[in-house]
Image 1 (cartoon, one colour):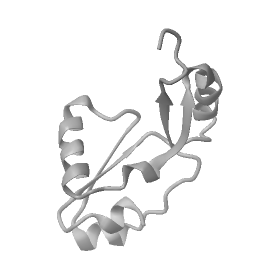
Image 2 (cartoon, rainbow, N blue to C red; image 1 turned 90 degrees about the horizontal axis):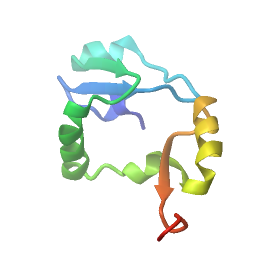
Image 3 (cartoon, rainbow, N blue to C red; image 1 turned 120 degrees about the vertical axis):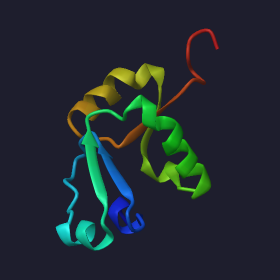
Image 4 (cartoon, rainbow, N blue to C red; image 1 turned 60 degrees about the horizontal axis):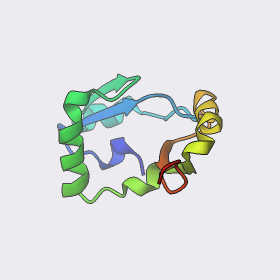
Length: 100
């Protein structure tokens, strides 16, 4: 289920960055629910606190958006995959980081 489907009446939906697949958005969904849509290449830093509050309050399964979990050694490869639109959210693990 996508962001538009789970957003309540008069809500806001933000699309950040580009994924591999273009989302299908029906204008009727926005009109019927009176939604506001915004898009950005990066998530505005001044919205992070609000986003975290929503994730916590509504128990959003954020782990479902993670497509890759890699060590820092794999950073160049995963950044290239990101540039090609082949990743969702990436989590870097520190277990194998030098000095740890």
